[in-house]
Image (cartoon, rainbow, N blue to C red; front, side, top):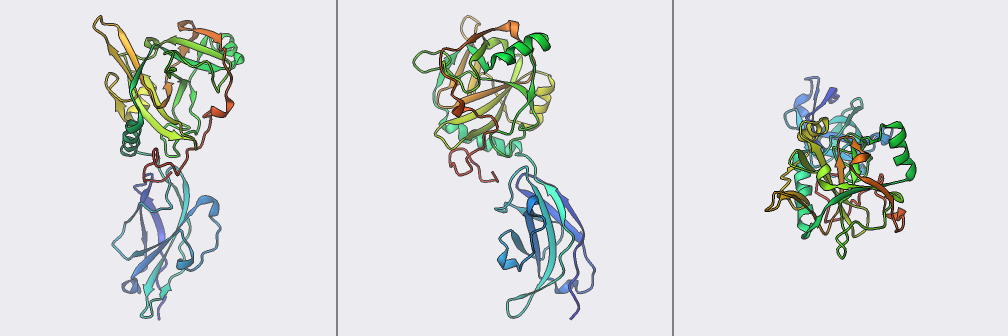
Length: 331
């Protein structure tokens, strides 16, 4: 019996966070015998893993022979922003239920994409469910070590400069490792209406009026929703001055929020035309501001509380098993 054709010139296209299209060329001889395709998918670090029979390899997809390109979607093994290797063989189902198979194709590599705005909107809707009532606030604040503020004064013309966001939060977040900004907090204590005196990030706090960062001249975006194996849930919001590079970045990737009417953080006018600000009570908000901030807009002072290092979210990994803050596509 003539050997089955080996897939050649594999092409991967239309890559999303949990799907891709795949096609290849084949010799036309024995093509009519092909009943199935075996697609072996491995995370890149397993590139040299041995190829066992398909029923023994949990990462292998057995698909009926369909016209190419073929879409691989929603496979349990696919996660966002992850490098994979893929190899293909053609197969012919025999009368006894076993398969005759071709040789494996060459191994190809590709990387899945970040969450799209559709996926981020799903995350946002889950966050809205637990956001709670809105509490008033009047300042943004940022805790750091004394050396950070000394460096800003002496080497950065009295400015805090944006830096690239770390990899904390959802693995598929399009802002991780890409968006430049400065992290601020706005959460207040329920009983005092003021910022808490403890912080995971340093004993010195820079504090400035909320209107210095957040106003009708800025746009607001939803960035992420996650937890770190605790009961606390975090939402990342991005404030970007309209027309700024940060605004352009977010417009293409993140769901935009109405600054006066959303479940997380609002800026609106009262009867006297003054700006008033509210934040969600039941979420810890991490606010990224995408432009430099001059220290002269606020003040730096030492906090009276503790430095709670265990609550730091620097490069924190999201709990993939949490039903509250995960969506069904990847992790």
